[in-house]
Image 1 (tube, rainbow, N blue to C red):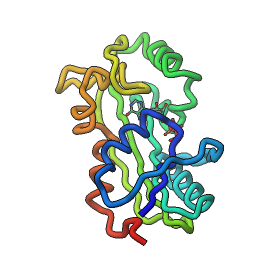
Image 2 (image 1 turned 135 degrees about the horizontal axis):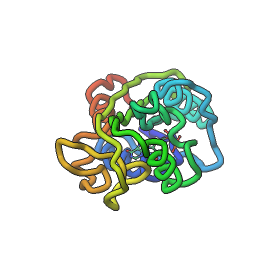
Image 3 (image 1 turned 60 degrees about the vertical axis):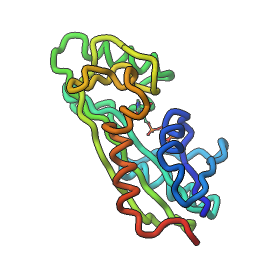
Image 4 (image 1 turned 120 degrees about the vertical axis):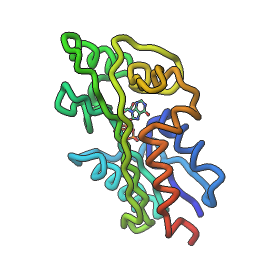
Length: 191
Ligand code: ITT
């Protein structure tokens, strides 16, 4: 019944809460002092270790999201290091724009891995999805969080930060991963 959302990122939390709400479980927050070190080398590994360790520490079902931006011209960087690419969102954005200053190759993927862990830490479900786009030349828009102002989706002619939350959700890496999660869960925190 109770499901701990194992994230400290307010932007992610907002999206997860909004799109998992209305399901049969009661979402609860992870205590701030419970911090999990992300030692994995893939999104899937990090999602699993965050969900698993939070579930075990609290003895409750837990869901975790590990996500990031993989830029083609940077061989997939910042990737799993997206959160560690700078101290603040503006710093991370500035660094990425600087790294791409002299290239016209702007293709990038947002990736999101979601893992659900049982109270004993065992992984009950793991899904992953991506969204293709381009790194804009300059930030645009005020919605969303993180790298949203520079993630441009050519088919809509908008950055994630210029879209409504619903439009972003309908095409984003996290929106697709949540969709897969909801479609594939057989065993949910009912017990
Ligand atoms: P938790 O581990 O506590 O969940 P975190 O922010 O450390 O929070 P990650 O390690 O998964 O999470 O890092 C994700 C990074 O990618 C972080 O810098 C986010 O801002 C960014 N990111 C992920 N999804 C995004 C989205 O939908 N829009 C913009 N930026 C996103």
